[in-house]
Length: 328
Image (cartoon, rainbow, N blue to C red):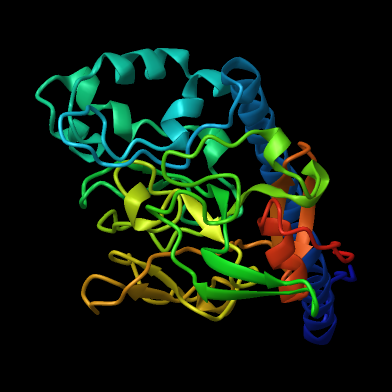
C-alpha cells in the first residue's frame, strides 16, 4: 500500500497563523521605512527651497516679498514669493511664460482663452510638494478651479507682538499675517528683508516650513500653499503664534474642510469670511509623526517637535526679538 503524505487541518491553520503574525510584524516596519523615505525627500525639498531663496537674495540683495499688495493698474496682483522663486527652482520656462502674461490678477490667469497661459497655474512643481501628505500635490487657491497648491510656506513671524525684556517673554496680541509689512519674520506684504535683518542669527531664524492640504477639492481661499490667488488671505506663509500641528484652527478666507481626519489634531480650519472673523493665518503642520520639518535662514533643515516650547517657537519665528533662544 502507498501512503500519501499531507498536512492535517491543524497544521495548516498553525502555518497560516504564523504567516499572519509575520505579516503583521512586517507591515509597520515597511510603512515606517516608506515614511522615512518620504520624510527624507521632504527634507531635501526644503533644502532646495532654502538654497533657491538664498540664490534669489544673492541676485537681488533681498529675499522675495511674502506677497505683493493690490494696487490698481498693476499686473499680477496677489503675486507671492512662489512666482518670484520659479527661475531658481529650474522653472525658467514657466516663469518666462508667466511674466509675459499681463493679466491683472494672478488668480484669473486660468480663465485665459490661450491654452498655454491657462496652464500656468495648473503646473505642479514637485519641489513644493511633500510626499507624506496624501492630498499632495493639491489644487486650490484659485476660486475653485485647478491651480497648484503646495505644502511649503515661508515664515511670516507672529503677527502683532511685543517682547518683555524683564520676563524675556513674547506676547502676541494679533496672529494676523497677510497684508502686514512686518509681522516679525522674514516675509510680509512687499517686504524687502535680507540675511542681515536676522539680528538674532541666521541659525536662530525660521525661513520655510510645512502645511497640510485638506483633501483634493479645489475650492478654497487662503489655505497654506495656495500660491495662485490666496496670498492676501494668508496662504503664502505660516504664523509662529502657535506651535506646530496645534489644535488651534488656522483662519483663512475659506477652508477646503473645517477639519481633516488623519491629519495631526485634525488640522482644524475656520472660514473667516463666512464667519465674519477678523485676521487670517496658517500654522505649521505636517503628516510627519511628532512634528514638522523647517529650514532655517542659514540653509539648514531641522525637525521641530510638536512639543517645542511655545516661547522658543516664537523666538525662532521672529528675526530680531533680541532674546536668547532655548534648545529645540
